[in-house]
Image 1 (cartoon, rainbow, N blue to C red):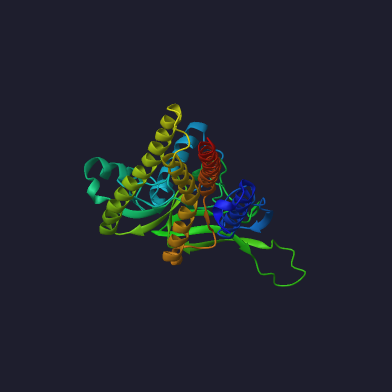
Image 2: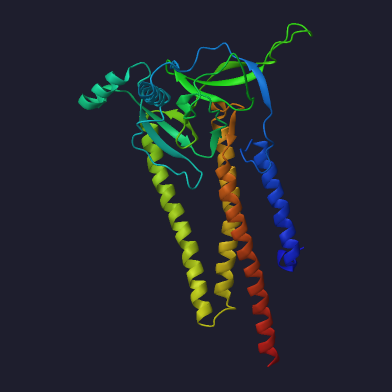
Length: 340
């Protein structure tokens, strides 16, 4: 069966099926989207771990509490490597890859850091990363370093078991997460879950909510060049889509609606928009395969992948329907001219 012989309803049906397969693929990869992801079930867990950051007593005066809180937040951002970001090339809109660099001072105090920053910034080590904006973590906000105002995890807390906390300690990245706790006996009434710290190889950018893969300086420079070239290619592609649409509108204003050029333009726009989210998904699957050793079960696809995909799919379908309509109009016009 040739595609041109399919009705618009049949084409719509195929697109719906493709859409469902797309959702299933994203779900299997762990996409963080509330549309089809069930709400996590809260569980009771025991926590005997050392707090990620120093706790501030409730007896501290309000102004001093806020000052200490701000200091702890800054130190945490410094340790995690998602603050004091340096140069890099980002590609967060396209959902591909990007680069960044950050100053890191895992053991120094804020006083020492500000002194070095004002005198000789070269003394502070710089770390380089390849960013994967399509991949993220289901981050738990439970401490004031996560900007929630809560001061600690309790010994028997209640929280969703699928969320994690990312932190760096002694230059090693960890995920603090909830895991099933082995029960010694059937009569054991203790909490069935416990908090543990699991070491990971990646870093996490809290501001942009994306994974960061540590790389060396030369690799980052190479990626910068690749990203600039990719940005130019994507810019050219989007400009060509806009130019094709503008030329189509101009032809309509001149009464030249049913032409081969307009059909080519509509077909180019439609299939480009329909193919774009699929290519982005395949690219990010490839990134996961290449850096599989950095990925854990807690790494999920960001909901931005779907947010950008459905818009492109919807626009592509609209232009495809227009392409079919104008192609049918061209056929009717040619038949009318032959009759005359």
